[in-house]
Structure formats: C-alpha cells, structure tokens
Amino acid sequence: MNKYLITGFSSFVGRYFAEYLEINEKNCLVQGLDIQNQDFRFDHYKNVNISRMYSNIELIGASPRKLLNIFQADLIGCHIITATNDILKKLELIGKDLHEFSLETVKMFRHDALKAGYVL
Image (cartoon, rainbow, N blue to C red):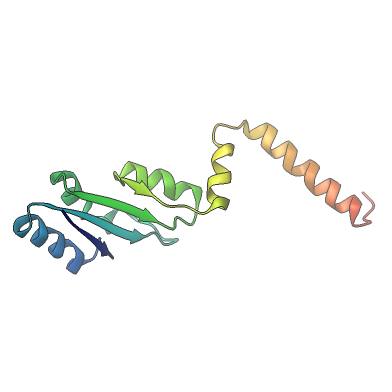
C-alpha cells in the first residue's frame, strides 16, 4: 500500500490531489496535514468532507496554538492531533472550578510579590 502525506491539506491543490489519489490509486492511504494558526477557522477545512467520504483519507491537525484548537480539531474530525507539552499540560485544567482557579492565581501573584520584596 502506498502512503501519501499532503501538507497544506485544506488548500486548493491539496483538495484536488486527494481526490485524484482517491480516484486513481485504490490501494493507498492519504494523510492530510494542516498547521493550525492563531486565527483557526472551520471554513479553512473544506477537505474535512473529503476525509469523511473516503476511508483511506486521514486528517492530521498540527501545532495547535491554544487549548481550544484541540477541541476544534476534534470537532472537525481530525484523526490525529499533534500538540506541544505546554498545550497537553493545560488539559488538566478542563473542568476545574473557576472560583478555585482564580483564587490560586491571586495567591500565586501575592506570593510572587512578597518574594520580590513588595509590601502589600
């Protein structure tokens, strides 16, 4: 089985190349890779419909910049989502009580201010 990695999968060329492979190479796996930028928008992912139509096409969401991008990539059906350790650590915050989180943040700032010699 031939494997193809299409970078810029949501682009015009990527879309038509994926369709070409689907029609002309029946025994192949196509992986579409897109890097998510800060202005992540669902309309950039027109090829998601293609990846749902064909069983041999997988969508890879790469380099999410914020925790929200992981959920967005999941919602559009990415098969694989890559993320940095910094983003993965933030997964622990999901479901955390916001009052408790705010209180911890204020205590951290207070501790840092006292440590720096400020008088509060």
